Length: 595
Image (tube, rainbow, N blue to C red; front, side, top):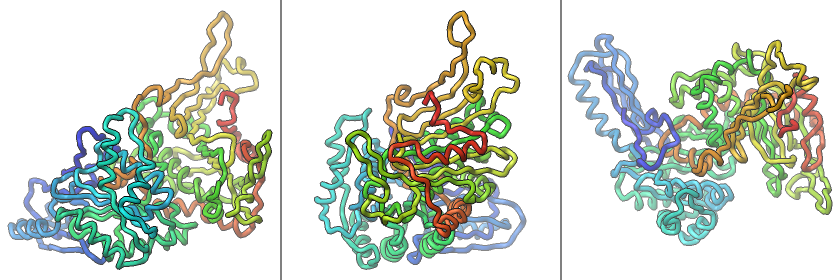
């Protein structure tokens, strides 16, 4: 199978890129062929048009695997030379496999950042692209275009981008030179997001830089969701690749509920095939989330324990020590449940709880995640506690309330904090509470997974712990941010003549163990999108299943206008979150005395 090769000094983040990176064809030793369907590029969609080749014959099987631009499926087969020749003719006229390899001398990658003047583009996307370039992870021939309504020259775009670029800690040599080379590949095109004419002009500029090579095009939609469809329609009609692949990265939010999300998906699929849509959730690109499956499936000590038999509860905790800070207008339309829980935390939960996939192929992994989501109970209002931060004065500093934000309505009931208890009704996880907690303006900043194990049956040392039996249980903590770490809490004897027990950590602190800087999540996800690796991107049925869990709850909260529990800025959140956990005989792990 043909696969995308990266430069030897750039380690791709994708362990299974060979499954989806480039067109490839494989014939088994039989030469019987029949009923083949191909997809070649079509100007109507950023997708493909179907070309059919059929013949009749005996029921021998062939395998023809083709991806990204040429797709073939097989049915009945026939012993016949003519169809083979026709097949080769169609293949050669459609899209040769080597043309889709982005590191091929005959191809180029054009990356267009739609919404280039926005904060996300300036703070994350352009720095991530430069980091990939600095690490020699981008193909030899590439061009970056910024597309925005703001009137900017190429020089002005480069000046804006240059202010946010940094070099890797472990490779500081030639930093200035690398920046200059990168910026020379950055260009700007100003235009409206709903203007086909402006995208036609963009297409002309892209073709000039592609210089006759096979053009692979990636569009990153760093724009509000209400203009996604306009931009996709214009790119589809006016700026899609004529002879390579075209892919579109879509930023969350993917709607506000099941209905709006489904409508957005239907609109996108008018112009895109599903495998061209890369729905990005940057939390899936974080190092510790990426390591979650490795930790479980490649370590014998964990996989046998990963079930209701040994695990008492699992906690997914997200906290920020700052408020909305001017983003209140956007946040008030979504709230903490839509902004964090329904996507970031639920995606991590699905990765944590899924069964062992058949392979590391993107579809095998996403299939298992969907099974988890479909096995979960729909959330009700009784499963959730919501809160909103209020003003607090500490010393000489007064911290504002959520409604003090000028972009937030004074009577807003939008939650800035939520805690929820979720359950997976399958054989592995039946009865195990999965607790989520997310909030703004809390006492610290963290994102972590906490796995609390059951008590040891008949523990000989229970009396040594007195009434604090919870301190006798083991706990696995995966700290996603900050200070990435994995540690396991165990019980051990304190040195000395007496028998005194202590709880200690077996600790893997990443910054102490590894000298290499951890890549930003956007670097990993952008590289995956360029390579065609979809493992860390969200499929449409996965998105539907996620919204199905939360939509009834969200509608109930809004219909009843439930008043949130108010908590002081900088506190640990509403007291109701502790009562929710206590209902399931659980204590939040981030409130322990050893935290």
